Amino acid sequence: MVKFEDSFLKKGDTVVVAMSGGVDSSVVAAMMVELGYHVVGMTLQLYDQGQFFKKKGACCAGQDIYDARRVADKMNFPHYILDYESVFKEQVIDSFVDDYLKGSTPIPCVKCNQKVKFKDLLKASKDLGAKALMTGHYVQRIQKSHGAELHRAHDFKKDQSYFLFTTTQDQLDYLRFPLGGLSKDQTRDIAKRYDLPVADKPDSQDICFVPSGDYTKVIEKFRPGALEEGDIVDLDGGVLGRHPGIIHFTVGQRKGLHISSPYPLYVVRLDPILHQVVVGPKEALAVHHIQLTDVNWLTNQDDFYCCVKVRSAHQPVPARVKKTDTGAMVTFESPEYGVSSGQACVFYDGTRVLGGGWMTT
Image 1 (cartoon, helix red, strand yellow):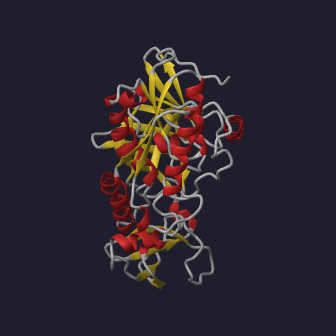
Image 2 (cartoon, helix red, strand yellow):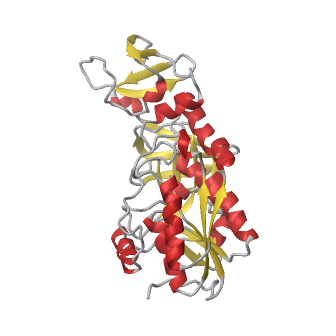
Image 3 (tube, helix red, strand yellow):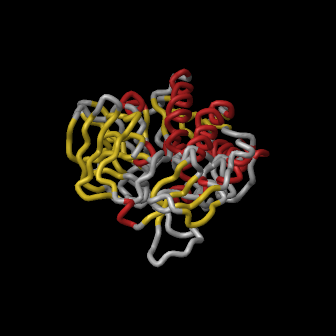
């Protein structure tokens, strides 16, 4: 028998499980059935499959919707497909394309959680009368007397808390993440025990609407003619070479510049107005503080020391966070390198997520 303890839920309660068609959300649904909850599976139709290249391993594709239905049939619970194509295009795809053209490096998975899954899907779950919305994310929700807290997953290698920093307190009180205390291997073992048809399905590796892995093709499709060539310049504006478009580069990038230099050069910043890629030595990447906008606060503190992550794959580093009129100012204890506009900065107190915001550098 699987373990899932929640003082606010009891057997027979209706719970909605957001099902992507992958092994994680499928296991969550199967677990809840075994534990005696009335499970309703919901899968989001986010885009027209014919618009994009199909690739094995990409999430949210037609095969995934079919797989979610197969799991629901096997475990005998109702499954619904919700059409959110227009919302997804406006809130996620268009934003993704526009951010790249502005020289930023977007994180569409965060926007999808913020603008679609934890907004519209959560509302649909409440309208259905469900007591909770459950997902297969690897994060932990810990109930305290002051409310629910968001924590990193038990398995740091699978932790997805960075991508959920926009989760509000109200949303967190309603959401549940049953896999937060498990490793991926344990999840797959459970899937095999239930004999789920997705037990051996590979993990998603790409952004769901960029299944080919080539996001430039998506940008060209939605903004024809938007890609412009330009100069690669040094910090003083001297021309070192040419590039096919700033969307091919990110701050901190070293490889793929195709210019000769007696010392290593890195992308320091991108200029969407002049269509320039500005390069320089590694020390030019050093950042001592950053400005954040659209900050989501999961703490009442206005000025505090904590650890922050500026990239999903980075380890948290010490910093001071101070609330401002427009968001927050983050001051690093030691300079950070490769900080890029459009990425997120997430605050941690140990394993607890205290909030986060979008970097404007």
